[in-house]
Image (cartoon, rainbow, N blue to C red):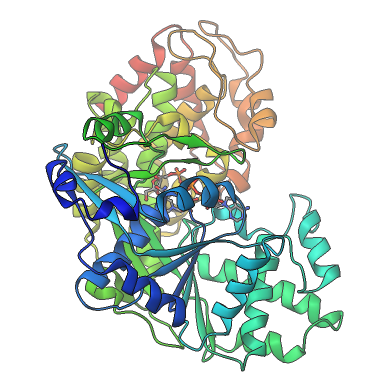
Length: 539
Ligand SMILES: NC(=O)C1=CN([C@@H]2O[C@H](COP(=O)(O)OP(=O)(O)OC[C@H]3O[C@@H](n4cnc5c(N)ncnc54)[C@H](O)[C@@H]3O)[C@@H](O)[C@H]2O)C=CC1
Ligand SMILES: O=P(O)(O)OC[C@H]1O[C@](O)(CO)[C@@H](O)[C@@H]1O
């Protein structure tokens, strides 16, 4: 038996026997060099960071392209550091599976520190301040989920912790963006040192989102005299501080029991998966797929590691935006959402099982190749057709990626505009395309209405995934029963189908509502009607 700890790394024969690849560098040397001359800090110590970003850093070190590691800082869920970083000496075991189920197991040792970013952890906060004063610091990356950047609640008022931070100044911030702004101020005070703040979160125009949150807090502080006006100028001066945009793509689901068992069979001890009190599912290992795409706007005022040597596309903002639109609007996420909706209706529990279903596979092929590709903006660095092929033939069917339709169905109301609305709009705006020729996107929208009834195709009730609009949306479907005829369906569904926040357009106005309602009518004919409708229209 052996453990994922520095003390056991020297037991090379045990790791070799278990087919686990060890780091090919002097861990202690990299750690010391990073401590004195830090180059890279990452906020958000969760799964994608450990499984993707830290692995990029390790690749660069192993290729001799970088002589320092990355420092992880956690803004929100400190249990991650206490229970998953410290006990394993910041090491992580990344298990990558390809489409054939071949596993690569690799120890990642490029994370040199795990710090809790809050003033209540005095030592860690002081250390972060020293790091932000360092002239060697080149980039700060983030994977803190989209909500991590929010300053406002749904009513447009400041969130309580943000409000407190604004009133109290940069001395003891509590909100995530307040802490980052305070550390940016530390850097400013140390001599206006240059830096790049790079959001790697899965949202459109992520760099803009990060910049606007930090600048907003800085402005409020300047108004109250806590900081100089010049600090706001510094944050807006692209030659000193940049907020590059990025597109990130790699499916990193929650840790899987199956992988845990495999590792335990290898003789590894303490591979337990935990769920923290803040609901982060995390383990000493990360399970992920082989496919990965990272596209970053190349704007780094203090220099940067040669990320391109580790397969990262370094490019201009337009290419980042086109890549992001290709992935989120046409080639991956709309297909994912279609599988999520029909998966919940047809009783599926995993995405990979769904892709074996001939009707569902055909549906996502139609959405991707037929309807999506007609309007996709080709980012040039990734071929959209080949990208869809990889998604459908290799990535979604991967049985070692235990992703679920229920996870992807989370927040569908928020995802509709970007995943389907943009394509509908592009058809409307194109002189060569007829929006009424769309068949499969309306089928997914009808499927979603059917999903909102919260009754599956067997007639069983199911619990819908969390969604901020679920209660409001469900109300419009109340009273509709399987097997009954309704004359006023169009009117009943009108409030949803005309909602431009959900679909980017009014589906009545653009002439798509009739088709959606027709499909929906077919899907409520009785038990098995969803399957029948799907079968009829995809064939
Ligand atoms: N897991 C995936 O497949 C992919 C994830 N991403 C991006 O990375 C984000 C994180 O994903 P994972 O690391 O896999 O999730 P995770 O659940 O393992 O970790 C989430 C991280 O975000 C932090 N966080 C959550 N709420 C926060 C808040 N309000 N303020 C500051 N930090 C907060 C958590 O403390 C944790 O460090 C996703 O939301 C997405 O934007 C991007 C591509 C793929
Ligand atoms: O539908 P969601 O919740 O954005 O999840 C999409 C999944 O696909 C991805 O976009 C793939 O990169 C990941 O973010 C995630 O695993």
